[in-house]
Amino acid sequence: MEKKNMFDNPQNVKRLLKIFFSSVVALLIIDVVYIILSEQHIIHRHVEYEWEKYWSFYSVYGFVACVILVLVSKYILRPLVKRKEDYYDN
Image 1 (tube, rainbow, N blue to C red):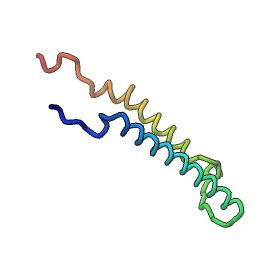
Image 2: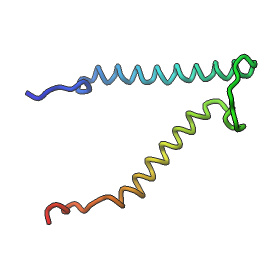
Image 3: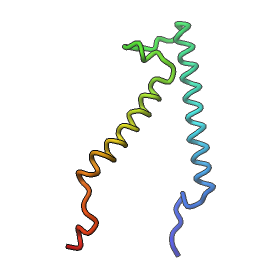
Image 4: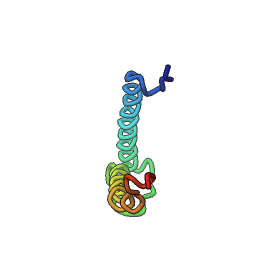
């Protein structure tokens, strides 16, 4: 009998996705509260550049960086390290 892992059960995957999306919503709410408090000068945000003041700047920046990383690895790095299908047969 094959051992079942944690993610073989669809209920566990649904729970994990609920936790993930709840975390995303909580972080967005915290970001909005943080921006509101910084605009009222209760909290200082320590921004260096003007674009860091925009709402969800870091989440958009992180998403774009990940997309660029995936595209570079898929179209530039993969052809460099990829071997032919019959590499080990010869």
